[in-house]
Length: 308
Image (tube, rainbow, N blue to C red; front, side, top):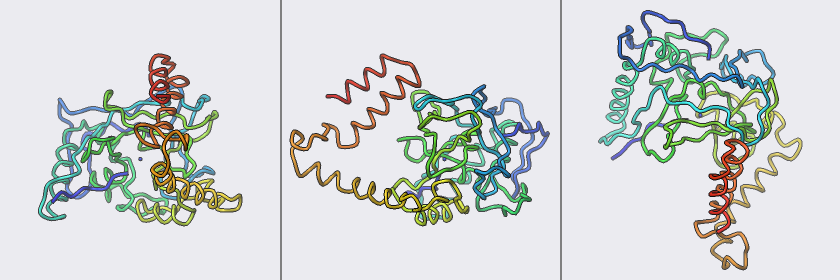
């Protein structure tokens, strides 16, 4: 039996002599510890968003916003994980799997430098604190913080990574940025999903992955992350037909596989040798390489595979 721990999607930490993490987690600084700092760039900055219009009400006091314009497909940042933890363990019970996960997480956290550990403990933990404007750091644990802020590392089944800057990016159901794990770089890379203006908050999407209406999305986020989403899309609801469009898109996605298998490729005109979703993915890769990375060779490679 293999049990998996669920995963998701920065102010300068103080150089404390000891990092208290609650529930007995304590680590004095030791030479040779893994040291990571939040990613920095002249193109974005961290800011206090508790009083901003885009505040989502979940207690996240810090966000990321653009300090220069970004074009759709342009790379915003790339970041290495400060912690990379196995989240799926062979076990005879969920309790045993949770114990193994906590042990692995403890080892990972204990390997961090004091500065990096302090930065980790400054992140939110959705089920370990009350968001009443007065956060209680002592109530947070590395385990809760990792479960709240970690990302699955692409196809590396059973592994999650914690990224100090990506974790500061707040959620929007209509995000302007998208992240993906680059196994060749061992880094999380974030690209602009659309044009982003100066001063605009950079947001990713925590889920759900399916096309759902406002209430279903809010229900997912409430259950998974304990916050009520107040992004533009959820605030708008179906006033401009957003929920209706999501239902239509979802229905269209559901019918594509049936349509693909019901007619030959030359009749339907939307088939692809590797499956119905491969062509648009390759096209996105072409756009990112051309507009974001300015890599014409790699862009041509994506385009050639798209047009086979």
